[in-house]
Amino acid sequence: MLAPPLSELKNYVKSSAPASAFTLVELLVVISIIGLLAGLAIPAISGSLLKGKQAEGLSQLKQLGTLTLAYVTENNGEVPGEGGEGVQSFSALSTASNSTAWYNVLPPLAGSLSASNYRTAPKAFYEKGSLFYSKGATYPANKTASAYFAFAINSQLSQLPKLQALQYPSRTALFADARLPDERNLPPSGGSMDSLGQPKVRDKRFVSRYKGVGIITFCDGHSEAFRATTQAEVLNTNKVIWDPTK
Image 1: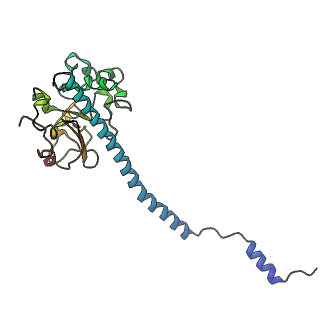
Image 2 (image 1 turned 60 degrees about the vertical axis):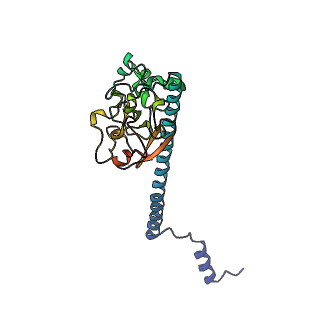
Image 3 (image 1 turned 30 degrees about the vertical axis):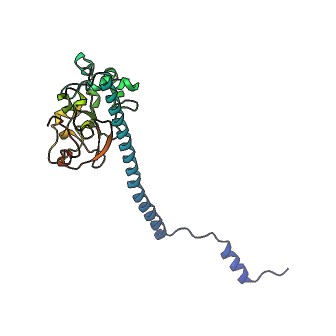
């Protein structure tokens, strides 16, 4: 048998050789494309997570509104108590003076633990399953030393004899997101640092923790994702009333 021509052997060797690896330039291009795609995906994922937290916060405050209306019906129109002045210790939550506070009387209506039940397990106050835990809130590092409420009852309602006395229930705040010490205030002013985290809220302690949006539940039971980037927007009585006596 005759041997194949030398030219055919050369072609065979070339075709059998492994394909060349990526060049450095090609590798850098691939890395750049991956980085670009990741840069586009991360904000979208972060936005989706924030929307999810906002939706959960809206649901939580809506539930508190529903529970409050049920409580009011069963208690001759009386609004639940505010539950103390200033940030409360876990032991203070269970005192007799706070027995009618919203955080003690509303949760049992939904089959949940009242705040006073967390006296011996403060860590659980800030965990999933607690009616008081907000995924969107930024809690202090030493949060288990006190009960920090990320949403609270409108402090101005205590001046009302009955909830039915409201003239504009659909515009009067019942519950709202409340600013914590490490969260940004709405310019030009905000609540003093020693008051943040207490179980009652008003205009100056309201927080827009979802990128310019905060949750407000109104006295007719409906809840809104309320957009506010300044104090002026929160004080606009055409949108929200904090003090119903004015």
